[in-house]
Image (cartoon, rainbow, N blue to C red; front, side, top):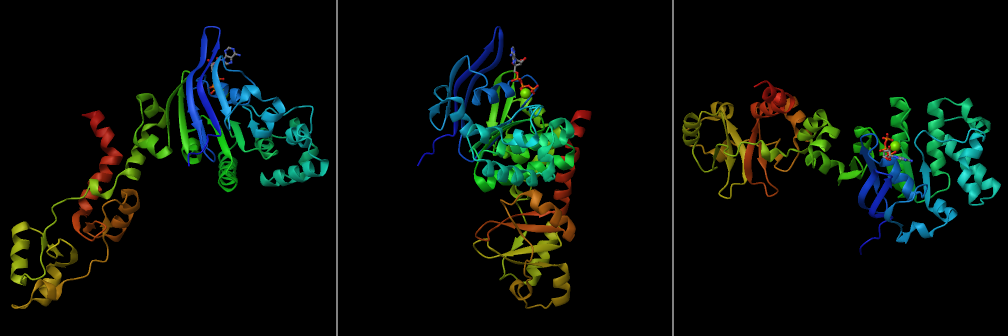
Length: 382
Ligand SMILES: Nc1ncnc2c1ncn2[C@@H]1O[C@H](COP(=O)(O)OP(=O)(O)OP(=O)(O)O)[C@@H](O)[C@H]1O
Ligand SMILES: [Mg+2]
């Protein structure tokens, strides 16, 4: 069954005088998605968030929440559906932390005990002492205020959480902790989260879908993997950055793209004399042994031949088992390290039915890694 989007933008435009803040936004956000908006400053990210929360009205177009046009909802109905962390935290200075956290629950007329319990639960979540609830925002550091901003968005248990640069002013350690918290919360509760960030690492880490914005336009919306694989424009490439793209190449390159496809093989019913001739002729010190269907049976090498040589023996009599092999679809990321660590000279590559498809040699692997790490510099210099 087709699921209904939680949030749907239909041809949204927002225009201030001559200034087009966002134009032609069409986007469906499905239940449980974690959507990260990323883009240059002034590209319209905050504008989009504020329109979902109806702090701003679109100049034209429609925003639907669970199929309902939000222009038909009253503010209380809307707050019931969406929690919001605004850019620059936005705590009310004249209210205590407790009052700030329970702002929306109060609007929704929760009983006092329920509000208290919630506030205590949340403040624990971000590792701040309970007596902070009685303080005022100015009595907290910037990073502490930001943590309060994040949990305030979670207070009323809405299904949709909007977060506009919620981790901006945090040190890397606190930031990572809060990212993990939000991500695991989202996975556990199935909430739909829309988050604005300037930080590509944050977007790639958290998002199920990344939306790249430039000058009021949506340039690309895609999963983090697809974004890295197929950046739609040079602008997206620049946003991702060269380092990440190079890294991503190892992350997405399967073994089959770098393997040699003509491994020297021999059938098990050949004599050892045949094997030696073939090795001489092809200048290799090892042969893969395959049956008539090209299924991999084992290998023989100079050493086993030297140790076992007798005139009337066949390859099948002395073949060694292959203990280490690769599947053609495996990613280099997962295999390169193991190959290099084991110090083997080559590794056979097989398909799902054990057919021999190729080999990865240590030197081809080193070439490839060299290419990934240094390749771009070489081309620039030449
Ligand atoms: N009230 C306003 N009147 C006129 N122009 C506005 C108004 N609010 C925003 N804009 C313009 O709309 C565009 C989008 O602004 P927005 O705040 O959505 O950007 P942003 O992507 O959130 O940027 P940042 O990353 O700096 O937060 C900008 O060009 C901005 O100057
Ligand atoms: Mg903004």
